[in-house]
Image (cartoon, rainbow, N blue to C red):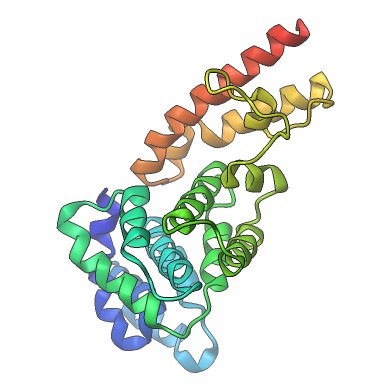
Length: 260
């Protein structure tokens, strides 16, 4: 994924204060490229109470912001229930498909985030704010975090609290939580035919109008062409193709079931 390579320039920002410093370093590098470093330093000196994550977003570096936030969230989730285990690291690599050439540098960022005393919620809040126009991708991030939490066994209380707070910070609804957690409908679907209502995140009692509106909203949020236009990382665009297929299949099953 190209965006992993792009954050490496921000690694020098560690000297400015841990993982969030990497955001600052990346943003400063972009400002220098754009010839705006002087104005950047005058307007956002530390004593003015600047927000480093917001600075990255100001320069349209959503790719860097995304990468840094998911690394930090993954590291802090893995640490929240005790020492980080190899299974959790491997799950992180699988979920976000870290390319071999970036493993070392991303590993450094992961370790810095793991050992830092900084809280994780500001990262989740900034991620949710920066990608508020793409709830589908934010849900994918939450699902990936669930997979990391399950990697070393059952999800513990501290991990569940972490995930719950992250879910709220990302601005996702209850249906997104249920899908990410692997729940949804109480009525268990068969492996061959997943529960269509759970996929759309609507109750079986929902009206045809609500179901249709939900289907249209999910299609807008997850359509690959729309995601590409909004600067979403390529990896999540690939996942969106699969999600759109599931959403359409669920909609078709409900239409057949209800006869509309």
